[in-house]
Every structure is written in structure tokens, then in C-alpha cells.
Amino acid sequence: MTTAAPSRSLSLVALFAALLAVFGLIPKIDLPFGVPITIQTLGVMLAGCLLAPRQAFQALSLFMVAVALGLPLLSGGRGGLGVFVAPSGGFLVGMLFSAVATSWVMRMLPGEGPRRLALRAFVAAVIGGIGVEYAFGIAGLVVLAKLSVWQATVASLAFVPGDLIKCVLCAMVVHTVARSVPDWRFGSRTAT
Amino acid sequence: MRSLYSDRRTWLHAVPAGIKLLVIATLGTAFFMVDRPAWLAAGAGAVALAFATLGRSVRPALRLVVSITVASALVAGFHVAAGQPEVGAVSVLRLMSASLLGVMLAVTTRFDELLDVFETLLRPFERLGFSTGRLALGLGLMLRFTEHFFVQWRRMDDAHRARTGRPGGMALLAPLTVRMLLTARRVADALAARLGG
Image (cartoon, rainbow over all chains, first blue to last red; front, side, top):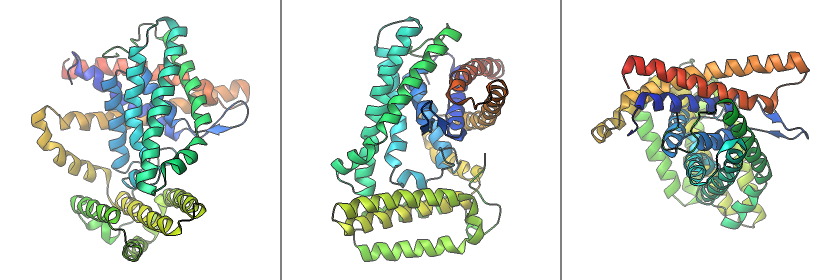
């Protein structure tokens, strides 16, 4: 780690990984119109929006290591090495790159202030949290489950509406964070 | 957090974690390289048999097994619908056997045993500036605070129910995230005071 304050960064990385785990433990949340969603992937989008790319990568890696070592931290109490080779394994590995991509986009986009930041977060979450995540997930379905690219894409599309809602939720959380923690440095090299 | 590990000891508990990982890695790779359905079926049968010998110890992981089975069934359904049942059979046998191997490891191996193996594997990278001590500290912090934030979330949810009669749902996500960020700063100060920097 090349940051000036490695133990600061470590704490943020570890606590964000903990938040990801808690998002997996929280039961499904009912949206106002009655559709239940799991929010773990929302945690991935948030990691991208709130952390620097390197930190987002580290937070997700830490989380993945804990999952691979057998802790049941994925939503539905899943964990262990088995989940990485299950049909949805691509989506799991994709979380790592999805968070980094979200963070990069967040950093690239201009605009300060809660509203602009929320807009940045929405765009970043759509690109990283949906675009990159689904690319890996679909690749995983093709490699692990031997579906054709077309079949895998059709099978995955059913989840896009739910994930779009998560992008909106992510933007709303970023909006609140920007107002409650005004000195949070979104999209900087090292968020602290 | 309910662990996947089972205290009910089986023959597989006695096998060192490193050897189990090696066997899983080898078998897992083999499953993905073999294409002949007959061989795969034999392999899957052997894995299922080994899984069955663990008896009631697999109970903590039953939900996980069910979710893997459902996912595999969906994949099979897709292949059958596409008119290629053989490809479906091959990929389901593969997915199920590889996942069951992983479940067997999780059920019979304690977290710290696996962490030891993992740290040993990473030791060569210490020369490149990777610190296994920091990894262990990071994992420890993460597990400690997973419980902490979960308790916080439950309290906020209870408070929300008491005020409104409805579960907190997504209204709690932002406050929980803000608390996490503020706690991270406090923990960072504490760590910096003890570890320096």
C-alpha cells in the first residue's frame, strides 16, 4: 500500500468489508411496491462510490478471502470455495472488478455537492455495478455452465431491473453521506 | 452469523486443511477438464458418496446445497430447452461435484486452519511487500465489525418499528453506511495510535 497512512486505509477497507457482510445478513428488503431485493450488490456499488479504486479492490478481496475460507457471508448464508464454481461464480468474481470500475468512473466524473455526487454515483453504479458485473457474470455462465452467450445474457437480463433500482438506492445513500459527512473525499486517490 | 463449520467430527475433520485444499484443487480442475459424461458421472457419484459419509455433519450447509442444486437445475433446464440435454448433464455434474467438494471443505475445516494454509501460501509474496500480518488484522477487524454493524442495524430496525410500526428497510441503509464511515475513522485513529501511521 502506498498511501501515507496505511493503518487508516486498512481500517476503512476492513470495515467496508464488514458492511458488505452485514448487507448479506440483512434479510431481503421490500421495496415500496412490494418487490423484495437482496442488497449485497448494493454494497459493492457503494464500495466503488465511497472508496478509492485500490481500497475498493482491497475491501472486496478481503471479503472474498473470508467467503472462500468458508464464512457464510454471501446473501442466503452461502460461502466456501464451492460458491466460486457454482453457476453464478462469475457474478461473484465480477464483484471485485465491478467495485474497482465503479470507483474509477466515480473518480473520472466531474461535479461536487450532494446532488452532483449522487448523479456521479448513479452513472458509476450503472457502468461498474451493472455493465462490468454482468460481463463477468455472463462470462461465468458461459464457462461454468456451458450456456451460449445469448442464453446466458437472456438468463441474466431478468435481474437488471432490480439492479437498476439498486443504482438509484446507491445514489440516494451517496447523497445522504455527502450531506452527513461533508469532508468525505469521494473519488479521490485515497478516501479517508 | 451461523458458521458452515460443523463441530460434529467426521473422518474428514482429521485430514489436514492443506491436504484437503490440494485434493479439492486437483479434483476441481479435473472435473473441468474431463468431457466424457460417463467419467463425470462416476466422479460425481464418488463425490456424492463421500459427501454422504459425512452424515449429519453437513446440516449447517444444507441451505447452501439446496441453493446450488436449484441453480444447477436452472442451468440444466436451459440446456434441455435449447435441445442439448447432453451438454446440460455434463455441466450439471461438473457444477454439482465441484461445489460439493467446496462445501465438504467448509463443513469440516475450521476457519483458522484454512487461514493458516492461506498465510503459508502467501508468504512468498511478502518479499513483494505483501504483509500477511495485515491480512490477518484486516480479517479480524472485518469479522469483529460484521457483528457490530449487524447489531447496530437490528437496533435501528427495532427503533424504526417502534416509531412507525413497519420494518426500517432501505431507510436504514444510508444511516448504517454513515455510521460505518465514522466508525472506520475512529478505528483508524486507534490503530494509528497503536501501530503508528
